[in-house]
Image (cartoon, rainbow, N blue to C red; front, side, top):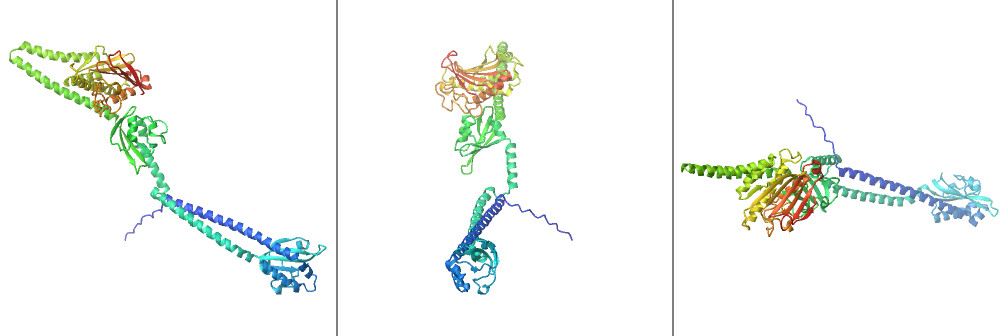
Length: 576
C-alpha cells in the first residue's frame, strides 16, 4: 500500500489592499481606544473634582449654620441635628452628613445604629481648624469625604462636620457619560472601518488583488522588459507629457538627460514627428527622420483617453539597404536593357557581314564600343574611389535607359584612398544615389516643357578639406517657396502639383518622399552641409568634411535660392 504524498499547504498571501485594511483598522481601533481612555480619565477626574467641591460646600454650609452651633451645646444634640442632617443630605444628593463632637463620636448618621459610635476617618486637621478631603472606607463603603470644624464665637473648635459621596454613587454619575463615550467610540470605529473598507476595495481593484511582493516583482519585470526590448517605447499622458521613455527610445530619438514630465513638443524632435504623435488619429508604420536615424512610428490610445503609447523601430539600416536594393534593381534593369540593345547591335553586325559589308560592320561595332568605353574610362580615371565609380557607372546606364544623358564634369577627381574611414560607403551611396535619382526624375519632368534633351551633370571632387558632390539637372528647378520644405520627410513637388519652377520629381527618392531627407540626414550625420541652388535647373551640392573632428561637430543645411544663373543667389541657412 503506497503512501499518498500530500502537496505542501499553500501559504496565504494577503493582497496589498487586505494588508492595508488590517493595518488601518488596527490604527483606527487604537486611536478610538486611546481617545476613549483619555476621555474616561478626563471625565473621571472632572467627576471626582466636582464631587469634592460638592461635599466641601455641603460640609461648610452645615458647619456655618447657627442652628448647628446652637445644637452642639444642647443636652441632646442628636435630637436636633439628626433630622437637620438628613434633610440636608437628601436635598444636596450627598451620601451622608455626619456631625460629631471633637472626640469623633457621631451625633448624626444615615444609619441610626451608627449614632454614638466613633467616626471612621481622619479628623486631626479639622481639629486644627482646617478643611480637607480624602477617600476613605467607612460604614457605607469607600467614599470621598470632607471633614470641617464648627467654630464658636471665639473661633474654638466645638464640633466637626463630615459630608461625603460614596464611590459607588460617583460611578453611577459616570455611567451615563461613559455609555455615551462608548457609543461615540463604537460609531467612530464603525465609520472608520467602513471608510477603510471602501478605500481598500478601490485599491484592490486598481492593484488587481496583488500583494506587495507581487507588485514589487511586477515593477522589476516591467522595468527590465522596458529597457531590454530593442524597440523604442514612449508613454505620454493626456497632456502629451512624457511619462516613460525606455533606453531604446532615447537612443532612437537622440534624447539626453531626464525627459519624464517634459512635453513631447519640447524635446527637439522633428515637427512632422511631433505632429504625428500629437494627432488624434492612430499612426501605423509611418516612417520619420530624426537627426541621425530613420524610425518607424506606431501610436495607440491608452484606455479612454488616458494618454498615448508610442513604439519606434529603427529603420535606418533597412532604409539604407532599401536604397541600395533600388540601385541594384535599377542596375539590373539597365543591364537587361543594355543586353537587349547589345543583341540588336550584334544582329546588325551579323547582317552587315552576311551582306558583305565588312568595313561598315567593323565601324558600327567599334563606334558603339568606343562610346561605352569612353564613359567607363572617364569615370574610372576621374573617380578612383571604387564605390563612387561603380555607382556613377550604374546610374549612367540607368539614366541612359530612361533617355537622360548623365555626364561627369572635367574637374571631377577623387583618388583612391583619399576618403577617410568615417565616410562610410553606405552614406556615400545614400547621398549621391538619391541626388542623381531626383535629378533624373526632375530632368525627365522638365523635358516635357523644353525642347532640350534632359541632362544631368555630376561633379565629384576633393575641395580642400571637403568631399564635394554636386548634381545639376535641366529640370524646372526648385521653387523659392518650397525651399523650406525640400528636406522635409514626404515632401514632393509632384504630390504638391509641381507648378511653375516647382522642380517636379524632387523629394521622391525611395520610401515615399524620403530621398532628399535622407541626403540631409546623411550629410548632418557626417558633419557636412547641403546647398540648394539654381542654374539651368536645380543644383544640389553636398560638402562632407574629410576631418573626423569636423564631422563630429555636426553640420547643417544651406539653401541657395536664385532665379537666374549661378551668380544670382541668396542664401538661407537651415538649422541642423
